[in-house]
Picture 1: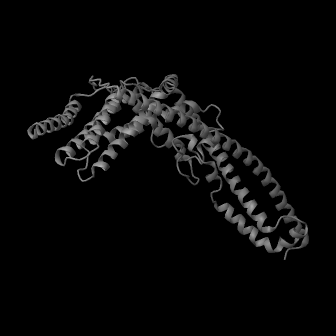
Picture 2: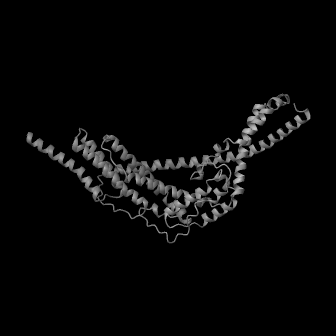
Picture 3: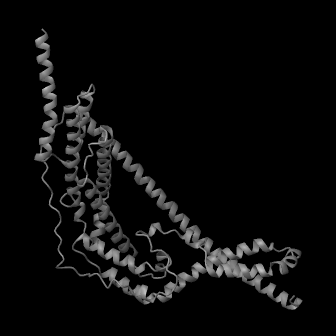
Length: 401
């Protein structure tokens, strides 16, 4: 057993460490409060955007129904829009060495790479992760727990178990802040290089933005918390970096949707209901994506132009036009399936199916701005069934007379 003097000295040292840890905890609580306010603000913004989008969809549907009931049958054909030409001659930014300096210098434990958008960073989960230093601290306290328990309780202090848990949690958060400071100091020079790269970046094609964003993400992936580290660099061009990521992400998402539509194949083994629902689901996704892009196109396009980020792909002469044109494929598949169903089986619900097919074709027609030759041919095949059925019914009635 340790002498009383040494025991009191250890106790005083632990009390001082606890007080220092509590001060650090207060600072962390303030940062946590600020992050919660930011999250609440973003959630409110998302909620407002969703409400505005739902209201717009409701108005569009009412207009569509009104046009359909009025017999609006615009027959203009849609010409395929020309895609943007990739021009890399004037490219000012090249993809740097894929072996980033940050990764070469880092010798600490590497956490998962940062998410594509800073708003996805979850400080809370990272702040409570386990670390070897905390385990060692717990063990050290456990060894002294029985020795110090009576003295602490007699003086009216916190119980050893409660004190141990609180200090462990505080030390865990302190380790997180220590890692942030370590990353800031170790990668300071390289981050200054990245700042100059982002500020000077100009592009002639959106595909170049994808490549550049991928490289930036790799360069920053070894940081324990990208957003927290970059806060220590006031010159970091956050708005431009976020806009680059946003543009690359949106373009990639729309190209993936276009690929899903163009590769769609009807499965004859699926029931009619399943097949039509699959097509309708793709069209709903397409309309939502295109409408969201068009709704934000003016403000987003201006911001992209300010940062010299390609924005023409958001126009009808770019990717948006290509997506609208790709919806004609969905119209063809939808009408073909209904035509085959009526020709092979017939149905007591023939009139309902016919109306369903024509309504979907009309929706696509309005969305795309018309039909091309192939889509018009498929539409006429569906239309013939109505004409044939009407003629057959009339002939049968005359024969009975």
